[in-house]
Amino acid sequence: MLHGSHFILRTDHISLLSAQNNNEPSRRVKGWLNELAEYDFQLEYLPGPKNLVADAISRADYTI
Image 1 (spheres, one colour):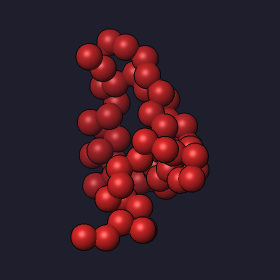
Image 2 (cartoon, rainbow, N blue to C red):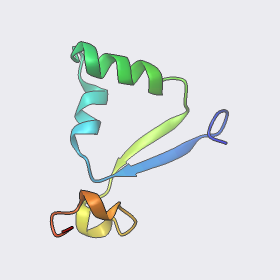
Image 3 (tube, helix red, strand yellow):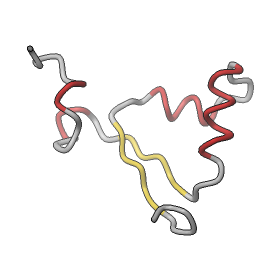
């Protein structure tokens, strides 16, 4: 369970970090940040090549 536990969310999506630190986010981003506010987490940037567990669909070399 994530509620009540501190966790680190590692992502290669660097714009998430800037959205969290933005003083005036858009309404849509503000809504998502409000949803996430109930969790005790820390965002950490992990560059794509080092993010070995990333979803294959999010990679440019994925083909159907």
